[in-house]
Length: 343
View 1 (cartoon, rainbow, N blue to C red):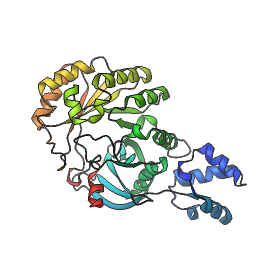
View 2 (cartoon, one colour; view 1 turned 120 degrees about the vertical axis):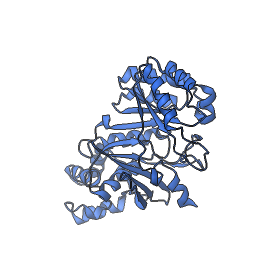
View 3 (cartoon, rainbow, N blue to C red; view 1 turned 45 degrees about the vertical axis):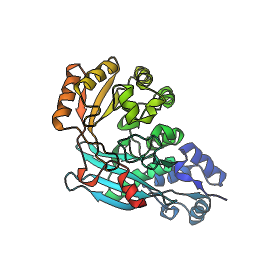
């Protein structure tokens, strides 16, 4: 019999499972705490359970963990980049960043990515598979255990398209915000998408108080379709209509991510067109000096060009930030370590 993934079970499912094993229901709380507070990676660690019950759990369930295959630490800002090996030998990446308010981790939701964005290393080679909720959680729990810290903010912006793994990501959100476990605030979670419009509407109906980060990267279809194949299925206007309705429904400000690529999408004309397109949407614009990956050929815009682009948007009344580049000496954008490990 194939063992079940216990780390992906909700509290109610775990309670039912414990009862089916002939144990009192309060044991579910103990197991849930071991898994989601202590970050236990084996049933033998659960010392307040009887030896027989621990064996019963081991016979029926598996705890999926993320083993540290490689870890890089930035000499400049202490940013840590993890390459994790999963139970089947596949690799994913996470990035741990320290800010004044605490620790933020950027996690992966898939092994690889099918979206094909031209500037991204994660999508080189396509997608292998989606991650389970437990495999997304394990990235957080391993980093916390490795550093003896509590992570307060999570960004689903690593390898993969979160909305292409919708059900597992929703289960992850349920578990990571459970007050009996990590108890993360939904407002401290950002979910990134390249623009899978039907799933944006599905997410909208859940009315979660997370931050939706939309990878826009261009103000029109000509530029965006060349950069992001997803635009050929759901174009800029279709995407922005979904974003407008999402913000109206949830009352949450959308973060539009805009990777600044020299000579491609960083002209004054692009800035003016972007301002026109986003008018009336509750939003924030995050300009990102593109990560230069050898295979993509993309060159980041100059500091002067980014400042000029930002000034145009601010003059039009938009809240604009330029992402501080953390971990520049360790290639902190996801996808590159995995490719090295495969070679």
